[in-house]
Image (cartoon, rainbow, N blue to C red; front, side):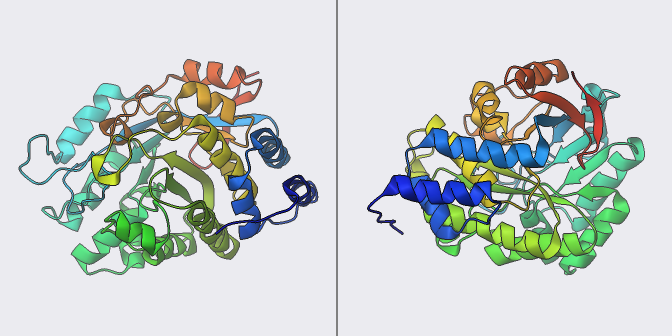
Amino acid sequence: MSTVLTNPDRRMAEIADKVENGERLTLVDGVFLYESDDLLTIGQMADLANTRKNGRRVYFIENMSLYFTNVCEDRCAFCHFRRDEGEDGAYTLTPDEILAYVAKHYRPEMREFHITGGHNPNVPFDYYVNSIRVLKQAYPDVTIKAYTGAEIDFFSRISGLSYRDVLQTLRDAGLGTMPGGGAEILTERYRNKMNVEKATSEQWLDVHRTAHKLGMKTHATMLYGSIETKEERIRHMLQLRELQDETNGFMVFIPNAVQPPNASMGIKRRTSAFDDLKTIAISRLMLDNIQHVKAYFINLGTQLAQLAFTFGASDAHGTIVQERISHSAGALSPEGLTRDELVHLIKGANRIPVERDTFYNEIRVFG
């Protein structure tokens, strides 16, 4: 889609008026913003939209990332994490191994386990249920954020259960919320070209719709920077916005940049800082009904994440401990940060650090 304008400055002023008056932006508005090189104006609009929602607060959480298995039946073109069963480096942790890893890295301040992994068809659905159950029994006060929409669709296929029954079974075992992964770009053109063999766009949306109807609050992501068009990015956001209008179940949106190199994707360079900041800002402007936009330092790097706090981002993610998926693809950021490092990062942007739980209840405000 190409926007042809005789006076782009006037068009930007019209969008600024919409933002000032709290009017919803359209597909055409979003594409125009992506085609504009006026990054500072876009950032100022996003900062206004964010401070109206969240003031000068930027949130973070003490959490730990866990990966039960990297064996996966799918072969998405952007993924460096997956392995075949029996391949060098492939693993599937037993519940005892999961508990041993957590015990080694656990701190009493931790409030969340963030769990994602491969779609391993060599273990039954009960494996995934029991892995959650043993964690919740050992750490009853820690919220378990586990299994993407694509993983829930996979569990439905291997178990023969409906999305609702899969989710309810996991909730009974201790699941508290779902991460936002597996969305990638929610168009079938992208998913076909990128060999995304897991859940379709509609299936991913339907999993989250089902979770929201069960009373769960969940997360949403976008994996940008490969073969998608700018219009596809905006259409991705609009589908999330429409579902949020329906359910009000998303807590936060996380735009994640693809981590190259990857010859099969034809990507030789990382996304630019210009594109990253613009995507954070446009996300804030388009997703007017989602409270938070996250600056994920794993993908952005710490300094650009810090800058993103003035471009519409209100969440700095968490301590993580040891991130593996983006780093397996060549991420240059730290694998995790300490609480003190996150507080310093947020204060460096002249924002107020707020430690939160998974559901954005405030634990501590750092003055």
